Length: 238
Length: 344
Image (tube, rainbow over all chains, first blue to last red; front, side, top):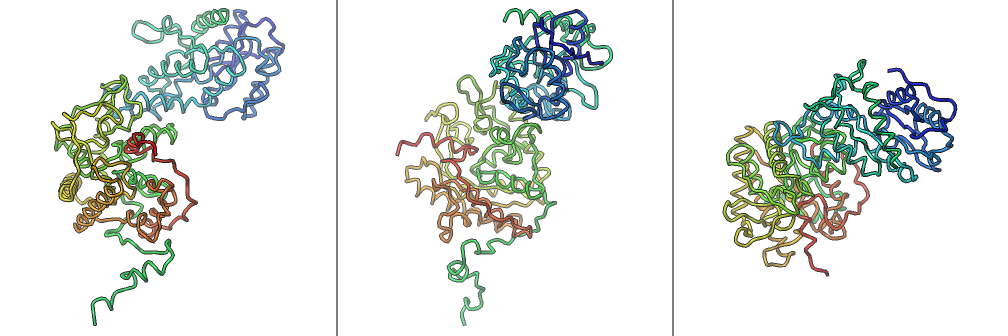
């Protein structure tokens, strides 16, 4: 999917500042097309934003250890009038940690069962939650850092889509992680938007119109549009 | 001429012990059979047994881990949740009777009990009370987890060439109706002690011999040709319910376990490794114990494991500086009893 251009001049009328993983690309693109006041943009792929210590905190800001991500972040920050994160005067939409299709990949979870009623090597809820916390450790720390800066932070569940091989999502684990990840991120002080009431069909599958047609894990422009409505409503309510 | 004249120096205390520096005493063990990096080794038992798995892996030996954790789970969480400690997630197995129970359940020789404990809305497995410190979210989870542990134990037994078991206690608590034995008294981790349902049992030497013998026979049936290496946990009892002073009860307990291990080691399929002597004997002056004189320090564990691998011909690692363990080993189920000690 093509990345939307990052604004070179500050978006002074913005209502929301995006720190996005790959799910943020379509949000930024649709917001730009609809003229919605979204500053910020894509920072890096989700798997780069989960590992512990992917950034350093200090001076009311963050510094990403990967030079490319750091440069991207500085460019994104330049879409506002802020010189550092703590100066962001907007609610922050942070999607770090929400790359559930990757966290629930078969390579990690394929040997296990999360249901006590299913055959296989059962993992207790405590083990699953502890593993999820480890997988998301960096992202959770980042969310806590945003809260410590006094920022209002919003996030959103990803669309319910499962990656094909070689990453190959375990659907059972993905479904469990929707709730666990929402709880873990909410525990950092971030408000998590749960779109499942409108994005799923009665069988619990993502409605076809909300799936990006050209890849297996991201949402469509229609999905992004509905989600942006929810996100801006949440931002206005803060 | 008398029988002692031809004996080597190691047969005499003065030449083998008194005249040597503590860390130069030995060799204390000659393995009965070859043990090498390709030997598949499973370990179960009391707290001391878990050191085998950790060190075996670190030394490139083949440790049977039939119930691994998800790979991203950090080491501290693995240990808190009972992974990586033994070859399956059985938790501590302190007595030969408890070992026999597990082997019978895993092999189908006895029905798996449906007993579970509860506390504060959470479900605990009475046969693995420390495996989920906060309890399971539901009874269905506890049942599924026990099924997984038993399947993993069966898998481990089927893959194992050498079964290491550390004998820990001769004191135990039983369910009166079923006769089943718990590793920790009811009421310590969950449930409540009820004299009508629960009873204290102190295994005699005869009990221990019978149970170890039955366990070894069952192991040989499950896995023909398997070898067994017994050790005795060197740490004293955290508490005794015998009515005797804990120091005296410890002496009695260790004497029974040590005698049983020695007797069993007469079998061709069984050997004894002297970790107990390495930690507790007079020449070592309790130097391998933590300040509470119960827990074995990291230094002591390293010396024991160096002795084990040294006897196998594997290069011994240099002992590390003594660590400073806490007042009780938090991964040991028995440690939960310590909280009930009165103030000194």
